[in-house]
Structure formats: C-alpha cells, structure tokens
Amino acid sequence: MLDPTASYKLDEVTKAGYVKLNLKGDLGSIPFSGNIGLRYTRTDRDAVSALRRADGTFQPVTASPSYEDWLPSAVLKFDLTDKLVARVGAAKVVGLPDSQDLSPGLLLNRIVYTGTGGNPNLKPFRADQYDVSLEWYFRQGSALTVGLFYKDIGSFLTTRSTFEDVPGETQQFLVTRKVNGEGGKLKGAEVMLQLPFNFLDGFASGFGILANYSYIDSSTPFVNARTGATLPLEGLSKHNANLVGYYEKDGFGLRVAYNYRSGYLDSVTAGGEGSFFKPYETIDASIRYDFGAFGIYAEAGNLTNEKQIRYTGAPEAIALYAEQGRRFAIGANFKF
View 1: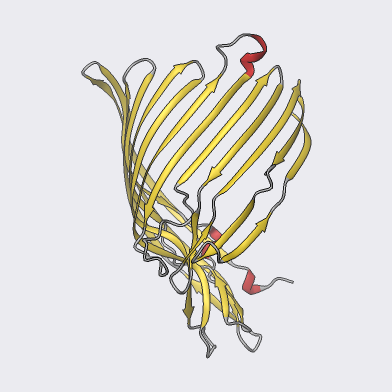
View 2: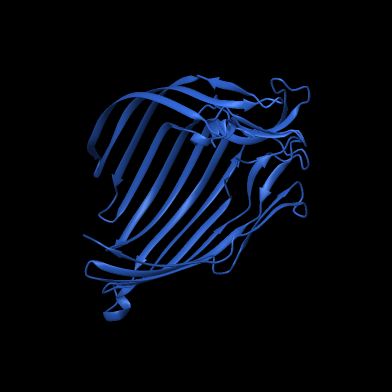
C-alpha cells in the first residue's frame, strides 16, 4: 500500500534561452579561441506530499516556489605551443537540488519527537566561479594538466537538524532536512596525469597509468559549536587522490585503482556541532577479455574491506560504523 507521507509529486517547468558569441584570433603570435555567452533560466515548481496527523488522518502539504537566473560565462583557450595549452574561464553557475530533497512531506517519530523531511523551497546552488589551467600534451595520448579554481558561493545546500513546530502537534520535533546556506567560499587546485606506455615495444606497450589529485579548501558562515572553527561545505574532502594502473592490448584489459578522500562534513546537528566522515580509501580491480562482439569480465570492489565511520563532535564519538564488505561481480556482454 502506498504511504502518502513517504511519497511525493514534483512538477518542474524550466524555461531557458541563451546567446553565444564565438571568438577566434591571435594575441601577438599566440592563437586563441573561445566564447562569451549569456543564459537565462526560470523554474516553476509544484510539490505535493502529505503529513500524517496524530489521529491517523493525512494532511496535504504543498509548495509552489519559482526562481530565475541570468548566467553570463566566458572561456578562452590559448595555444602557447603545439603541445602546451592554457585555458581561462569565468561563469555564474547554478546547480539544482536532488529531487528527493524537494519533497514537502515530513516523516515523524512521535516516540522520540524526531522527523525527517525535504524542503521544496530550496534555492539552487549558486556561485561565481573562476578557473585557469595549463595543459601539456607531451606525447601521443599523454597529458599533464594543472588547474586552479575559485568559487564565490551565493547559496549552497547543507543538512541541518532543528526544532520545528509541526501542524496539529503540541510538542516540537527535531527535524532533519536540507536547508540553504549563504556566503560560502571555495578554492583549490588539481593535477592530472595520463600516461600510456605506448613508447615501449611489444607486450609492454599496453601498460599505462592515470593519476589525479585535488586540493579543496572551503568555508561557510557556520561555526562548529564544539571547536569554534569555521565549518566547510558539506560533502567536500580537502584531499582527493586516485591512482589507476592498467593494461589494455589485443582485447585484454586489466585495471587496479586506488582511491582516497580525506574526512569531510556530513551535516550540522541541532546543537551546531559538525558531523564528519573519517578519511576513506579503497582498492578496486577489474579484468576483461573481448573477442569479437562478445566479452567477459570480472570486477572486485573495496578489496581492503574499508569501513565508513561518521562521528559527531570528537573523533571518539562514533555515530555510524558501516561495513559494506568486499564486492565481486562477473558477467558477459554482447555488442550488436
């Protein structure tokens, strides 16, 4: 049977239009290309769900917000040499919330007076972003790139637990839902290396590596009530790294990947404390063989059986200890 409090209907109509001007020319002896543009968007949203009252009846809950944005952008690419490329860009950007976060419904636990719900009035993620990168294509199929980026964030999404008055209830409930924050900053750098060993002969030419690292420093107006430190943006690790070794030749493929992310903010409690995930790293592997249109493969995930640990306040105050285990899969595919 359908539970009205766990269901919702969401209708969104987005109207958009844009203009773009392509650019091409020479700056002294350096060729350049790019574009400047302007995009307009308007979104009208209708959200419907229900609230279960204490007497067991259902009360409809609706919301009909709308918003619009003007989004200018510009990007330029400079061909410094036949192997070295520089790019610069600036844009005003928006990012829409997940649909599940927009439900107006509210699930209540009347035993402990808590609840979880969505927020149909969420504004999109809005930011002015700027980036610059240098790309070196030093060999066929190979690249080394370095980039810097900065975002001045007008609005962002974060998870908060606050005490709320609920229609028809005499007791306040501690409700967890997404809310908008304003005034965040984000800056960082990233490095990427793509290196196939195609400069070798024979069997060894199938080897290669892919590697990337990013550093992200973010801040918000929120302060951790326990430490007094400024809280970062939700879900962003300061350090992120991936290293992939692979072999691909004559239909045979093998990959081993190491992935790492440092700790990150998950949500903010009702008392203003940050709830954080501890650092997390995994090793994954896959092997496949293709012959003609037919292929077979095997995959393994989280070979080191890493655990996800979330804590609130102090690292010793563990709130979640999740063991997902190792994951294995085998399969076949056919192309036609």
